[in-house]
Image (cartoon, rainbow, N blue to C red; front, side):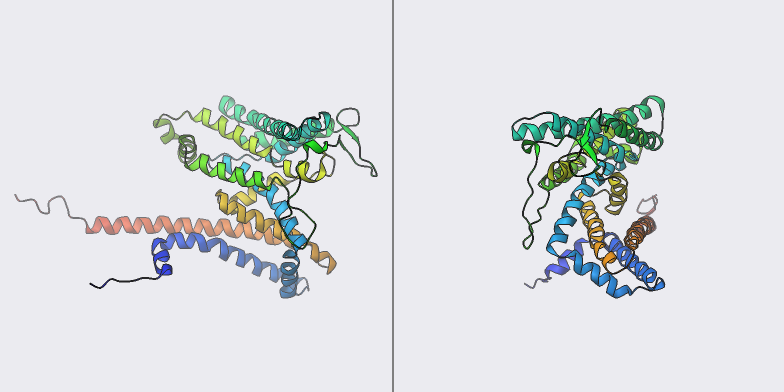
Length: 382
């Protein structure tokens, strides 16, 4: 008896549909297109395109640069997850930036005011951050379900309020103290019991990776399990696809909107924790900002999938880290922002083209099946 034998590659490709293969190739082509656009901009400004990108790549793979990339990607990943929770339900939580900054400020103030055994101290700080982030996002959720206010408008306004509230709280007479050796002000430093030590994961450098990178991995796993392995996740995704169908199946849409916003805000509260507990140990005027808006771009880049978001966060952080070499060579680091923006636009366009191709292919397949199906009169004797 003869039996056809196929290689592993043949079997693997056999399981991947042409449209599925296009979905995998689309972001790669988009990134390549962004690189070409960047090279064109460099050439127009009189800078060597190939040499510049080669210098960025060489600088980005140095041990210290890898640590910086992983640390930055950790916060980007948490930010993108916070945005993705809302995206999966067709909610646009634009307020992640305000939620995480207000959460980090409050958690830093509480962490600096108390001293507890290490596990309890860290747990308290993280709990406060999650609680504040969830509570601030809940305001937008309540406005939407009770008054029909668009979450886009409410979260943008809440960002402005959070910024002003944070500036008011970060005052010498309230939460802030002077930072020794500088004109900066910040909350009281968190005691050693509330600090999370770094991890020496990269050989060749004394720099350490944030210990809370483990938290980012855990949150990615929980995000996947919650959305794809639970009834709640099914209801959330169903509501995002069609509220009418969700209502018909017995889903309380208003309740799901509120819960989704609260969950998104809770994850947003974690964004500042790696930096706060792993490096700065205090919330000051130079605490990282803008991470919420970066998370929106990375969530779109990763298509709200935990693995896709991880690749997007690493790419974004790698580009930011490798841009450090540009100033040494007299090249504007703004070229990285151009590349990042082009990548996002290219990926969105590529995914939309793939989506349209998939819809068209599905229609053609249905048409062929209908054309080949027997009519009701065929095979029926009169």
